[in-house]
Length: 342
Image (cartoon, rainbow, N blue to C red; front, top):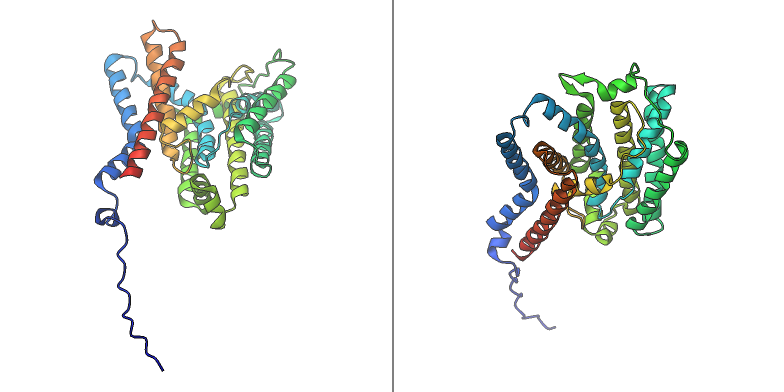
């Protein structure tokens, strides 16, 4: 009988630097903070500068107008956040916003319930179809949602007789109160938006579904291996995006007391800009609900400042917003690479 005289192998130390094993370095933490809260700092600086430069900026009427007008874009951006965190994109939300407003105004003649449920049902169904085509048929989100954008706009034109008919909302109905009413001196759409963002933040950060959303955006194959329902998650986020766009359109119709057919053009780009400015990566896997709200407010502050100047054409809003978005994307890319290197 032989005896194994080999000595046990000495444990091999992990090939990880001690500072990395101890946790993120100071540079990594600073990069993460800049990526997460950079938009908020920029918003505070912009508000401070506008307050100093324009006497009418901090007036109650101006702040309320900015808050209410921001509410509708914010609701659209809320749904877009879920889509972009999964690594997708939704180009149909602008048309769905307009369609939701027209359907809500048309349905208001049959009561508030119809005015709210009809745009939610139609826009949510279109979002569901987007999700099914993207998740089950593995089609590119860009192509699918572009087709949905054109299709939704076609439905809108059909409902409004090629845009010649504008449906009005009775100002004495409860539906009109949802858009024009005030609670504690603040427009009702603002409170509705705040409630939706709180719910969205809880879902994304505190639920299993939210974990699936991050996992799918981070690495779809790894998420599938871990047992995450990748297809169902994608279908859900596009459905949520459609619902949010339809609800935003309905609230806007109640605010304007009419279903305006020309609205929503370019809103999908504004929503994407707000989400990305707020810190959500276009590549997916990283983002915040609160950041998207900050991004919306920052865009609205920039637009308001341009309007306050008066001598600048409204086209400068698009120029400034586009330039600002380019700077943010470059900064995000640089911060992401810096964190990986460190």
